[in-house]
Amino acid sequence: MTQPTLIRRVGDARPLLLDLFCCAGGAGMGYHRAGFEVTGVDIADRPTYPFTVVRADALEHLAALIASEDIARYAAVHASPPCQAGCALTVGTNAARGWGRTHVQLIPELRTLLDATGLPYVIEQPNGRAPVRRDLSLCGEAFGLGVLRHRVFELGGWTVPQPAHPKHRGYVRGYRHGVYRDGPYVAAYGSGGGKASVPEMQTAMGITWTDVREELTEAIPPAYTQFIGTGLLAQLGTAVAA
Image (cartoon, rainbow, N blue to C red; front, side, top):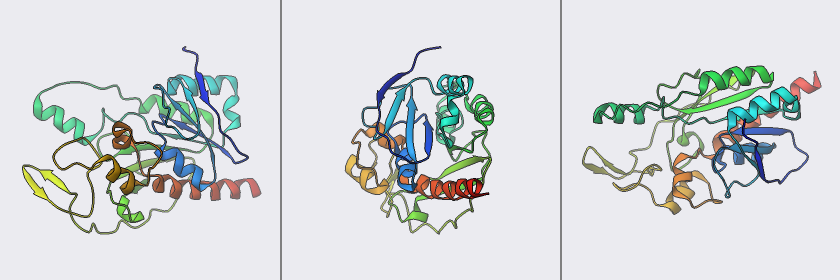
């Protein structure tokens, strides 16, 4: 097992949430705004991550926390594992082009470890073929954002009401099948073909602390996890009071 490297620590007196596969911190920022202290874990160096971040393999780090019982420091866990094995866009593109590339599906092993923590948890994935329960589905239009960015969430050990999915106000701006359409939403993925610029993605998703395109294209808007985190904190408070 590789030894994790502590990169930076910024903390406060809030309940502690573990943010696995944290990338640049879109999810982490939402939980912070909801009222959590956040510690991120990512296998890559994430100098833009705005909170405590540990550089380590997420599954190895989680297993070590469980084995050492240090997981008891945390109130909850969020995980956004790589989605290439189950993302409809990736699977469809690979099949269409005959690439035949396979990706390791981490979710079954991840879920086993999360269940072993005994903590409430969240697994986030894009719409697609990932083997997660669709306990919650969120869209940027529900939060008045400039992206759609549909995401599904498996909730382990707790629940939150499903908000309404408002009707989309139009198209995502850009080219699709050779046809350009204008619309109220930007395409916060890839590059070219009318895709959003870095400033447009930052504005559309409410992410200002990173200007790295690759991080922005992978991030979820903090509004999603602020909604989730607010519900989670309410249930944690109820459990403590009981």
